[in-house]
Image (cartoon, rainbow, N blue to C red):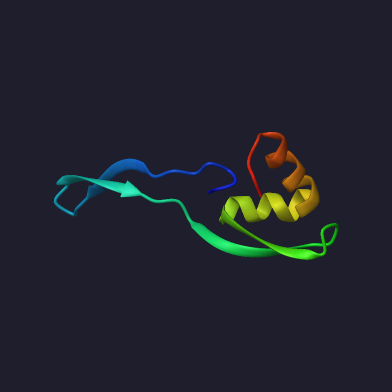
Length: 74
């Protein structure tokens, strides 16, 4: 489950001849293990690159409390 709810969006692949073909732009999502000092264990989350930047900014404890408040089981 992605922590910041990223999903693919639809766009066009445009060739040099300006032919347009539908394509998907997929988010940059990865599984990543984070060390949670308060729980003294690793937690594996599926996060996007932007999600990792948010975790770096807010801290993993604040991030986990926010997503747990939304009802996500971690």
